[in-house]
Length: 390
Image 1 (cartoon, rainbow, N blue to C red):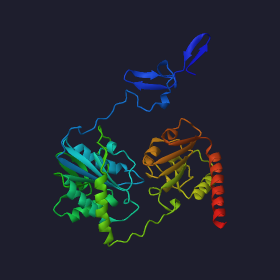
Image 2: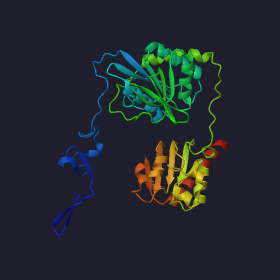
Image 3: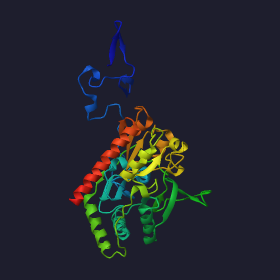
Image 4: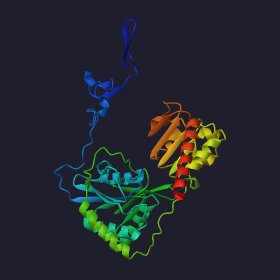
């Protein structure tokens, strides 16, 4: 309760819920804001004290220039590296320049929050399809249509990096800068001689940015408009190029998570000091067909090999699902899972940092939860086998 009576004196619980507004810290009771009957948790709007980011371009702005950002989506979203490439374009754009974002693949992110004024999404492409010639045809058609001053892409050693270099080779008249580590209105910088020398030059036409060259957290929003008609025209250009492609896409071969390296696995089951039954843990990981990870404490105790350690002093992972059993969540471990999409934590301590980081938390004994989950998984597998044999 918010208040209690002790010896006739009303005492206030110092740990009761609170908000922080422009006037400082304010204690509240959920469901009774300002003495009324308003349910604070059900309010759809943000509290008035939270700042609202302005839109970078004015409503009556006359657009005379364009900057283009290009990226491939991963699991319907842009990763941090791709977001930084879009942010670079937004930060360099002036009041008469719009930022156009071209995404190969599905996109569930808010284009305005990314800093884009117009967004072109081509869901039929992306990481699930190897179609470099079609993507190149689309990109060249877009360059002819928009005539952007600069093209920004993440230099990530995968699809974006490959496409950017292909574009530089195809448009020999355009300058290209790769491995860019610094950028501003005056120019850019790249490392030379194994990072011992920084070379500076003017802004290139095609700019491939290294990770962390730009902070993706923008102080403003883009317009976030969808360019539907332009998307249809680009799809036609890509389809025409795909017909005469010299490449044959054999599809994606799905590997079991247990057979992959931790930094490549999409499903990881990780153990901490709270896991006493290591054999049970491995049985669960095998049943789930998940990669096995561990905290530094569990590795130091000899329960797991050093190559299973996840964290700042171990491996950094980016799994879609990360199950943490008995991991309290040291700062180093949280750094190692910062890119994981869904984190599920099982721990007895409800105040553990891992519980606060997790998207779903289960307060309970790790051994009991592992046993129950293993039983459920085996029952589901038996039911599936029975359906196939019936």
